[in-house]
Amino acid sequence: MTTATTARAVAEAVTDPELPMLTLADLGVLREVTESGDRVVVSITPTYSGCPALDTIRDDLVHALSDAGYADVEVRTVLRPAWSSDWITERGRRRLAEAGISPPGAAPRHSGPVPLTLEPPRRNVRCPLCGAADTERVSEFGATACRALFRCAVCREPFEHVKEI
Image (cartoon, one colour):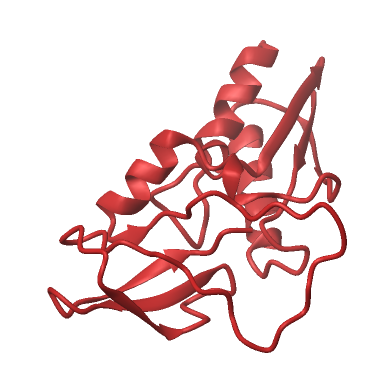
């Protein structure tokens, strides 16, 4: 029979459907894995509460753990505390850059209410392809809501940036 360590290792190896170069552990959405006999409970925190990939992540976790021999798998969504881009591991940040996606900087800190503005936040984003700091935002939204589209003024290549949350 499998062990809790194995159940966690199986869950940690599942990749994100929108960022397949990252595991759920790299992305920081995998919160907890507990085991009791053939039952495994996995807790995840989505990057956004309305993340469209959430059902696929759940299905991928259930399939991976079922294939590993667990008869009863439950995936729970935990929304508190909310996911932060600070939870992306250093390995995850490195893999994003290697895939041509700019990793996020430090998430903004708020001690009170978050100010609502009509303009998207300004970001100092380096090009993951050539390393230049001279970049411009093309669109606040890339392929997913958690990414913005940028273009490098030096190498002229477009790239996505994972937003700081």
